[in-house]
Each structure stands twice: as structure tokens, then as C-alpha cells.
Length: 134
Image 1 (spheres, rainbow, N blue to C red):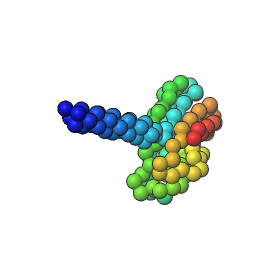
Image 2 (cartoon, rainbow, N blue to C red; image 1 turned 180 degrees about the vertical axis):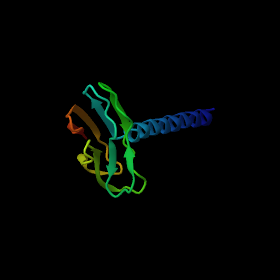
Image 3 (spheres, rainbow, N blue to C red; image 1 turned 135 degrees about the horizontal axis):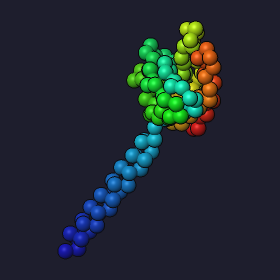
């Protein structure tokens, strides 16, 4: 009987230890980098794109309605190891405007990027504030 009780306690401890490791792993690895864009203007913002350095493809963002917030996880391209992330758009004259969301990021790096679109002038040029929290 003592041998069975010892096995039972050992099994219980092993199961508890595995559960703790799984929960800790989920907590540590579930933290994703995030992007939040708040449109504080009275117009819909469209045509925003995200560019990852070392990537040929841009990511087009959906339209952001007035006074609305767009939230997204930052999912780095599969071939991305390290580099930067920019947001860019074209104004009404077709001129490209870009801002760094993160000057340096690498796989596994966790960052929270908050973009506040404060205003849009008559040429479609955005006034943008960017905050990063690591």
C-alpha cells in the first residue's frame, strides 16, 4: 500500500509540475507585439500601409473611421529576423510620407506601439504622434 501511495503522490507532483510549466510558457510566449492606431480626426483615414525592412510586401491597413481605434497584433513576416517597421501613406499630391513605428525590432522582441493621428491638413498630410512601450 505504501508503494502505491508513493506512486500516486509522485504522479500528482509530476502532473502539477507539467501544468505549471505549461501555464508559465503560455504566459511568457503569448505576449505579442501590438499596434494601436487612434484616429482623433473627423475624417476617415485610408491608405495606410505598414512596411517591414527586408520584406518585399507591404501590409495595407483597413480604413479607420473618425474617432475610432484600429488594434492589431504585429506579426512579423516569416523571413524577418531583425529590422525596422514603418507606416506610410500617400498625400493628395501622391507624395509618400513615412514614419518609423519601430527603428529596431527582431523576432521575439515584444513592443506596444500606439499611433495617434491628431489631424489631417487640406493636402491629406497627417499629423502623427507615435509612442512605443517595450
